[in-house]
Length: 265
Image (cartoon, rainbow, N blue to C red):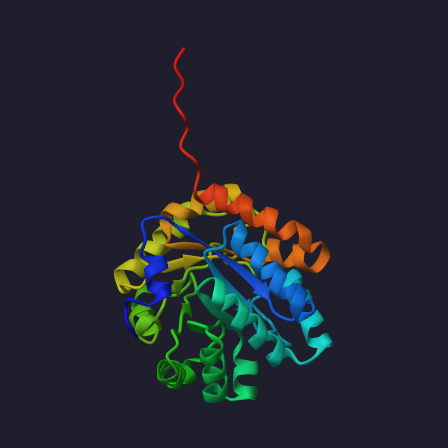
């Protein structure tokens, strides 16, 4: 994978980037495209588009509910490809999903479909260990990055193997809880974990899960190359899509505060 690709360029700039997770298929395509436009204008630097899975074991109730709605609406893959195609015109876009839909649709088929739609990568959050090499080769052949989620519990001895097949980024969960966690974050523990990841790999480090407020995003930002917000946006898209851009803008301001203007008496 060439180093001058849009994802690499974004994640190696001096400031912390803002990623926004959007579950695909919640709304009609016209509305979904409008939502993506608004989120980009509000400050999203990259998109993670979620391909719905029936058993989203790492996700909390909000994202599971979003996936369930998408599955009820049907045509999940077609709707996700449509969302990716539009999102990729706006910002670098990575697909987030589970191994079950990848296996069901066929890894090679799915990788090429998403690559053709403009995605820069696909992250399979529960990628089975015995599929790591095969999936890495499949993604690479399609011209996709294969970001990897690294559990906080991974011992140092396991990190070299865990990061071997990763590309694009390493995902360091800010919390060990499922997505949607709204409690405090152990910032020192996350700092130590990101240091371990940087020691194990030159890849950028991205964090999400439990970054529920702009204040928490500002505290995590110095540790990583991008912060991803998921549940707050998914909840807004499920209940009141008009709130999603304002939420995105608030997180963007937290990551990119304006310098105070000096005043003279």
